[in-house]
Length: 368
Figure 1 (tube, rainbow, N blue to C red):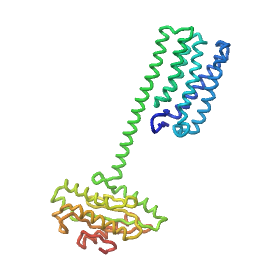
Figure 2: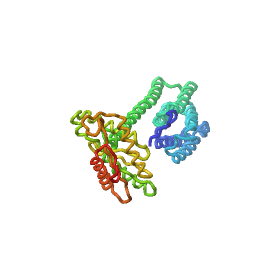
Figure 3: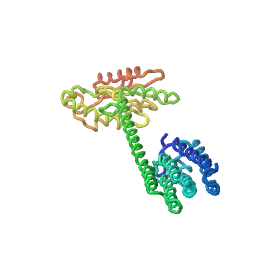
């Protein structure tokens, strides 16, 4: 699991990668213990390796256990603050080991191979943080340079070139990993954008931006479940633009779409964010689901929508009700056990009553 510190200053690539790095430290040190204390190295200098080797092994075990326990919280809190010190301690232990290796082992190639084994995993683990990588690699490189100068056994030209190549490989590996990480992040970002677009297409009307008819059933189910232990009730308001066919015939479908958008904005601005939702039901018909304490609140929402539309003053010369665009509204109250279809049917009856009574009005239980 990838983890990133919010500031980007201190971060390790992954929990598993960090544990892998710690395990490699343990394995390398165990190999060194067998080589140094197994009689294959210079016995007189074996004590120079005791503290750093066993220090790395013990320190790695402790950090591995802590990492396993913290898991994706490793870049948070106290451990995150201690990461630079932890990395620097690892580097200090390895610096001591490499310094003595250059003096005790008569084969510089052994030191260079060990250098690759230590630096490359560190680069893979800490590539996201230049700070951590510098704290680990810096002291080791300086120690190797100083140790080579002090050591009576000098590197040959080819060995010096090999050491430079090792350093370039380690540094270039970080930039390759960062590029790969950034490409992955971009891919994730694009995938999330696509998911959001698909969700928007699935749940929202592309023209008005309101919820679509498909999402109304889900919203209705959530709302009725939430009302199970509440004294409030759910109300459904059906809204229909008066003489919208005439509007399209007179102004054209492009202007008709603009009219639908402006009407939807009037509906949206009249609703309460936490308890109301607006849907484009189809064509020029809209639906509002609202949770209210009493019917009067639901009726007030309908009247606010009518007032907002009146304030918008959208011209409609084809209307016989008013010189501007108006709405007819029907309101119905949900009762336990009532389906969405039944609620819609009841609200539609009120809407038709509003139209029979002359349009541009709101009807609730057959009353204006």
